[in-house]
Amino acid sequence: MKLSIHHYSEVDSTQTVAKHYLLEGDADEGTVILADEQLSGSGRFGKSWDSPIGGLYCSLILKPHNKPIANYSQLAFVIAVGIQKALHSLLPALPLTLKWPNDILINAKKVGGILIEIEGKDVIIGMGINIDSHPEGSTHLNEYFYTPQTIDDVLKPVLKSVWETYQDWIRDGFEPLQTKWLKHAHQLGKALERDGIKGRFIGISTEGAMLLENESGEIQKITKLG
Image (tube, rainbow, N blue to C red; front, top):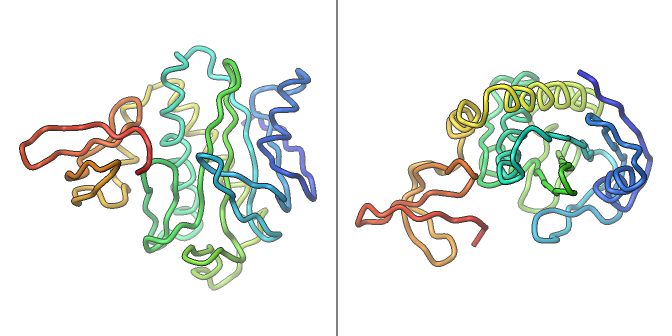
């Protein structure tokens, strides 16, 4: 595992710092930006990510230059599988599910999220996991552990598992990891409505779109959250 960790006490956003590293040409693959606190953490579509001290906030720079850029959308699911595996290793009984397209849930409440940003041929993977506290409606890891987990307790297995899962994707492609993601998919097989489209959630496409099957058996792809 060839990861280089740059640790900050406070940043606006680890994603912003990672972009600066790339802009300055000072970021090999495996560069990790870790912060104790983010002042302007963000999620998909510019939504804010509450990032007080006590959570895990990091960005990982990847350079999958042997893959078509069109396949980079698969990485949200690849990384989710890696995080799920890491958290499961810490507590096998943890009731984890993966919510399309980029959330980690415990008992159907959000405990973590993933943000994928493409910079040229490079990718910045933003990862946030609630450890000691959570915003209203979410949850955090230490609600489920007898022995409270520290950031370091969570960071090491998460980075190891994410890196290994990324290498699996580089070597074997998306299909095996797509199957693993679906094994833990939140609401798979349930009737849902997204973007005004109703149907049963039956899977994800090779580009990561949600597949909904309507009453007529037609399958429609949803590419963004409704």
